[in-house]
Amino acid sequence: AQKITQTQPGMFVQEKEAVTLDCTYDTSDQSYGLFWYKQPSSGEMIFLIYQGSYDEQNATEGRYSLNFQKARKSANLVISASQLGDSAMYFCAMREKSGGGADGLTFGKGTHLIIQP
Amino acid sequence: ETGVTQTPRHLVMGMTNKKSLKCEQHLGHNAMYWYKQSAKKPLELMFVYNFKEQTENNSVPSRFSPECPNSSHLFLHLHTLQPEDSALYLCASSQGTGSVNYGYTFGSGTRLTVV
Image (tube, rainbow over all chains, first blue to last red):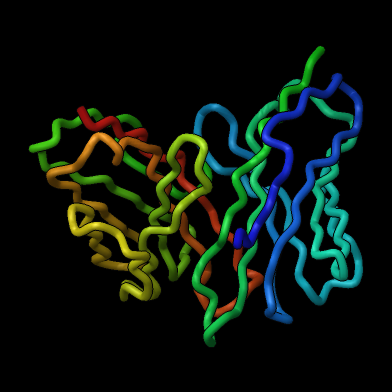
């Protein structure tokens, strides 16, 4: 079973609109971290936002916010007032503390976001 | 500049060649990682090093050989690769492997083409 599911392979959004990128995850751990990364066509993975499983408040970083619904195991990324430069691949990822240690990030397949003028 | 530098950015190699990818981080992190990103697949974790000791080898074929001489440098030695090994190879570092709070800082990747 996939640990991270991103159901939107591609999205087209008008500039200045808000956009929500979906992410659901699967874990039996109580302690885990959720991350979103942006990957422009240049290839570099850019960290956007982090949410810990014990954090009660939704994380926010500038125009990015994370809609964390723990019971639904959902961690959607919301980008407000989208800009042309937001066009990129977006990856949701999770870090678990299984087996006594964290073994690395598990990534979803990504969503290709295109912002249209 | 993220603090993680990968060289070369692009590499074309024949199936009989031997080449190496290099990754260097200037962030004082203790853990380094190699990931493979193929078209239409999720990122695949290949190797994890923590304090220059390998802690994970994710069933990677032996034609990929990692080397971590210190916490700041990571290499991926390549030999007798196959065309299906063509992909973007990403290096990342993090403070360590002991906490779910530790995210990664990535390099820009090496785009590898095997001909």
